[in-house]
Image 1 (cartoon, helix red, strand yellow):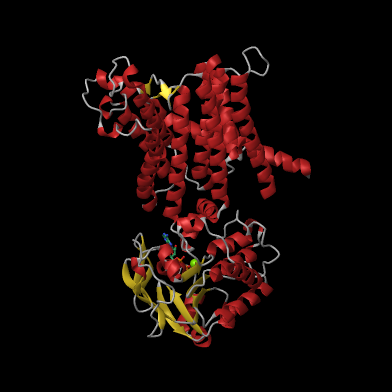
Image 2 (cartoon, rainbow over the protein chains, first blue to last red):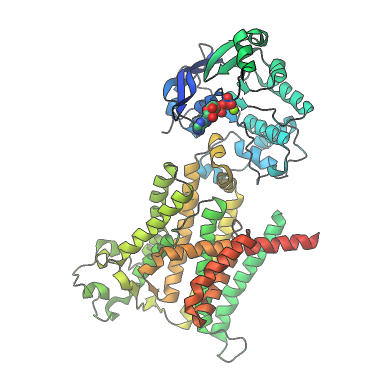
Length: 259
Length: 360
Ligand SMILES: Nc1ncnc2c1ncn2[C@@H]1O[C@H](COP(=O)(O)OP(=O)(O)O)[C@@H](O)[C@H]1O
Ligand SMILES: [Mg+2]
């Protein structure tokens, strides 16, 4: 159940993709949430996943992060790391981090403490007991607070944040983990127009250094960030391409209109 | 918020220091009849309450902070108590009824010829002192390892903790186990070479209970205020999310569970010489339920709430069982229900809210 201990920087992306999903199927009581799905995400790319409700987008993220075990198929991180052999903490430590569809920050902890918990560092129990933030780590938290616009609210419990601010805090927690792959499930739900714009800017500024997979319904938002879009439907990939190609694909139009 | 907590923590420490220093000293220095005299009965009663306070506080670490409703926490208390009891039995030596220099009376009575292997070493205080927290710690580790790794949570976890203490209850009832069966271990004579019934030893035991409780409170406070403490509360609120941040949740649960079990063992070890007996009833599931009730009534997740709850409930128990023993359980059940419905944060939480409202 435990994964191979990995040092950051060991992911083999020499062939291009950083995530390989091949023939992945997941069923819940006979219902196929994912159906022979194959998907490749390149190192450094920003990919948008769209698809009607229930298409399997969240389930796909569950599979990649170890929350759900697929019935069949393989999931690799780079050329060599078999994610199906690893549990959630091992996958997170290897560098695949996720923002949940429903914002799930720790309401009782302050904004600062939420970021501190996410900080990439030794996460063993003893190390955590004696953990003290060093200067560089403090600066890093400050920097992220700045990026997500929550500097003023740093000492407030996360529970009092608005929905949009919680989304931002979750994105901040993602950044603190210094991931190689960020899985971002519906980031702009509950955000104001300005917040949406800032989120788009942020995601765009982050691509390149890391791979980002964004699930979103809002087509305008997807258009503003994505070069490459994958459409999921009934648990498999319907089509892939640029936003224009995808939006003019008659099958996509039918799926969305017929929904 | 933090300062406020500090004030409460300081007051708790001050009260504990007063109890554990003034009461025993007054008991020894002043004569009965003096207004400053505390009776030996009061001394051992307070000493017992303080060991319960330590026990309640240790459960608060597990339940209040980590969200594990452990219904078998009394087992660790009893194990620590038995370890101390074994040391005290070995101190009796040939002064037992049967006068056997090596074997405790109950073994002679069972016609045993040799001391069982697991009774060796307990003639040494240092050895017993290690076993007092090692045995509960190892049991908690094994149990927690199995339970937390297979991700047993919620009601199921509570039920198996209860099953654990029940299994130990049945085991310790058996004479063949070699722990005195039904009667347990009693008739102690000496502790560290002093008469364990004497006033001065009782006074020292109260002092020791108070000081150890204060120390345990400070250490526990340091733990819950550390980053590990924040991870633990995060696990309580959103276990799944913590895993996705890269923390091995089961290791953190195990850590806090084992630490709490060791504290409970120490509490049991301090309890036994003050009441003069340890028997299998200490493993009874009802005892473990009572600990939960102390913590709920005092207030979860503050440490001092558990201390206040344990002392108040046990004081009420002393009063009521002296007056109408048969209503005690009804009273306890009713109080528990009233507190959970009316004061979900317990007495301490209620009191803190009142203070806050007054300020505004
Ligand atoms: N744990 C689960 N148990 C049963 N059915 C589930 C579970 N998780 C998801 N599903 C079902 O699988 C399908 C895909 O869900 P999901 O991946 O959440 O879709 P999306 O995120 O694309 O809206 C839905 O029909 C949903 O009801
Ligand atoms: Mg979804």
